[in-house]
Image (cartoon, rainbow, N blue to C red; front, side, top):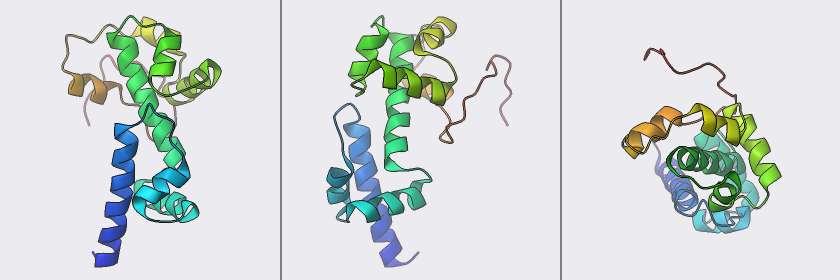
Amino acid sequence: MSREVEQRNRAMLRARDAMDRRFAEPLDVPGLASIAHVSPAHFIRTFRATFGETPHRYLQRRRIERAMAMLCSTDLSVTEVCMAVGFSSLGTFSRTFREVVGQSPRDYRATHPHVDRVPTHFSMAWTRPSSLGSAVSEKRDGDVAP
């Protein structure tokens, strides 16, 4: 790997790490691009080339992952979860959640038991949505590891 590619990857990782740390805060492309020390347009192109999805899609997926965990481990209302993970509109949250997960937040909560007795890293890995944006509609009961 060339030094230039390594530096570019490190810059993109810095921006992605900032997104992971501050997922619930309002984030914008110019601010993230400044963390990576590149222009906003270059940031979007390079982020997608590096991670396989746009910064916006990555941030939405991370927020939905957190929402999934909160829906299974807290008694917060769907609206409270929506706001806690960084969405400002319940409609946008519900639509995005359905696109990523394949069911509404309320239905997801009803079909998934409380996972507070399972270590967080296991429950988050088990319930992680696909980065491809396609909803998984099959039940995971009985799934066999590849």
